[in-house]
Image 1: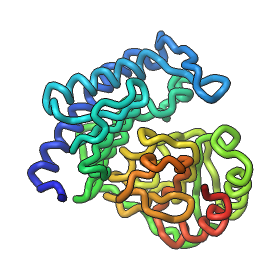
Image 2 (image 1 turned 180 degrees about the vertical axis):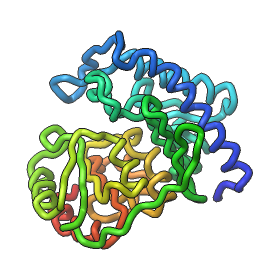
Image 3 (image 1 turned 90 degrees about the horizontal axis):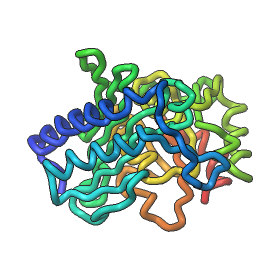
Image 4 (image 1 turned 135 degrees about the vertical axis):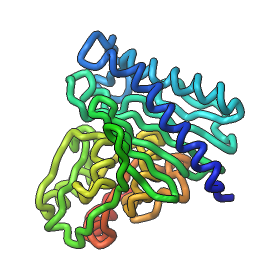
Length: 278
């Protein structure tokens, strides 16, 4: 059942509060003593900082106080009631490598599932004073006391597109890397290393296409309502919509995601992507 307008507005306002709480935990550590350690993930260096852990704790504490029946799926502290009616999906610092390098391209991702479907989400960059929020009623950017609607831009041809991915050597393997290379060769311009900030730029109408692989639920679900609210698309590499069925709940999902502002541009990219789709 869809959320009522009143409930959506209530949760939207609470989402703004959660971003403030996360920012309070993160910003004092940015470009400072952030306590980075290697958490022993699948990469040679998989960093986590006190900012990651402190921000997720702050978010969980505030949700538990306000909505004690809600569940969580978080990068740092795992799952708690993941099948609840409402579940918060959290990546407190998406782009930890950028964070420890002092680059303001990391983001706080906070998403909300209702009955298994992403319905509300935010991409926050508090150092730049930007908060991108989206739901079924639309998407907006809150920045420096002002708010403006977000809308993707038209870009029907891949040859005119500005595209992005985080790190092709880290994210893609085998056929995936070949597919990325083919799409990149066709595009006008490619940017690397932006993590989830690139998703926000598609919603803002400055980027046209983002390709990723190896994502977890917390890496993408918060962005889905923002992109869809701005008129964009979030699919897997077969072109299947991710908004109505969180792909991360599928054991076969390899985290292959395509984010686009224009369906025609996406369809051109999918010619290559489908050959490498899991």
